[in-house]
Image 1: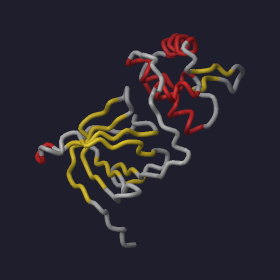
Image 2 (image 1 turned 120 degrees about the vertical axis):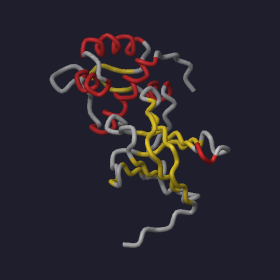
Image 3 (image 1 turned 90 degrees about the horizontal axis):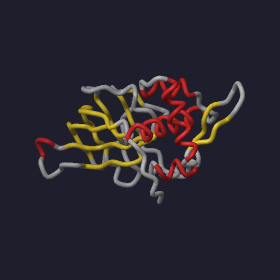
Amino acid sequence: MSSIELTPSQKNILQELVNLYRESESAVKGEDIAEKVDRNPGTIRNQMQSLKALQLVEGVPGPKGGYKPTATAYDALQIQDMDQAADVPLAHEGSDIEDANVEEIDLTSVHHPEECRAEIKLQGSIADFHEGDTITVGPTPLSKLQIIGTLEGKDDTNNKLILTIDDMRAPAGEPEH
């Protein structure tokens, strides 16, 4: 595991670079990252210089150029290699999100049933999620756990959605079509 300490801003920028790179599988322009993290493109360029110095990103020159995350970037963000991972579906307001995969589910307060929360770490962008949205996670591969909750907040730095759990099912039944 990497021991690189990143600022919240660097972590946020690097996470969005990884998300955008996964979607396009090609170099990501600084302007695209700036739009996702709501920052000035000049700020992104400056941050990319420090991330390059840390060997977390590499620059790709030319008109189709931009930035690519290095293997070290995935370590620094503690992202597991999801190529062989099982697919854990995610639905937002009832629609399946194709380009997102649930990496981790943290049940933060199950001991308090009235305030039961879950933190959902995603691979994919969380930019289009908003407070009050209905989120459905799962079913997970082994336990068939399914969590239905209301989005209470987002942790952009760690790419997590924080849900108030409305319903939890295990094993979740197969939908009847």
